[in-house]
Image 1 (tube, rainbow, N blue to C red):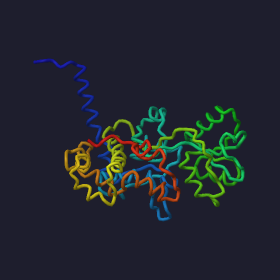
Image 2 (cartoon, rainbow, N blue to C red):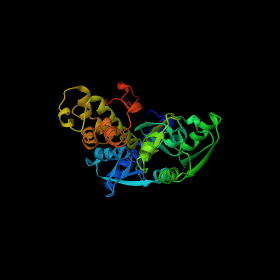
Image 3 (cartoon, one colour):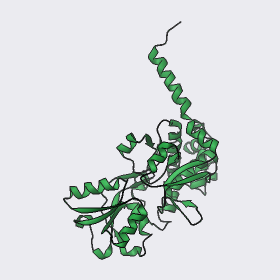
Image 4 (tube, rainbow, N blue to C red):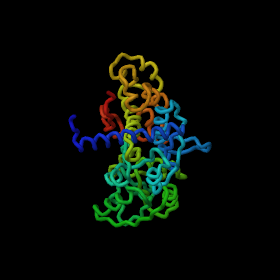
Length: 338
């Protein structure tokens, strides 16, 4: 009898152990009958509830897409509003299954929090908002300004780096929540409000006179925002990742909420793979053959999700910019479904 090297035996055992653990989150979510999704407590365009408790936004749609892929029902989501400070603890503790809360992908967060980023839902960057009455046209004119900022975010470090790099002085006035920060700015406790540009546009809508405020042209950082899942469950990591990739690929292939049933009849090889009429890619994820169609029917393709929540079809009116598809001048890109 041929002896198997111990190293190979241990490797095989480890692989089996990982395989056994890999379906844990999907099983937990399925048994519960509900996805637990961590979101912002209220950021228009990304995650905010109306007066009846109905949540909308890009981050919300990500979780609705996951629920649709698993349950064929985008309403099977419990949204858990979290502060910037508490969001990572909620994921680490298992209180939520996925964190979809305008969170910037950084090296330190990718390595020190026991979690993985699954993709980029929105390419953002940090900017500054000021009152038009200050007659400031550039962030380089903000020397000695007082700046309102939210604690527990990447914003604080970027702010320090920018002012130090440009030999400017500033005073930080920090708050625990985004709402507290913008209220302080509006009341005049600081000259400037700094955050991700998308958040500046969202928060400007909450001001008494939005037209009295302007977002300055400088973008001082890279802020790729995306969902996070816990380390140690590769299958769940794949599912959350490919829900977003499905939406991006759908836009590229011309599949929309309205034409999804018609496109499912196509003989094109890429569409047949996506819709599960050729191959078993859905099953490889631990889902069903129609996983792709379920997602697009529920929340639309990436472009539809963007336009509805933050783009031309929303109050924010943010241009696609970097979030345009790679073949239309942007950098939004997904691996192929094959």
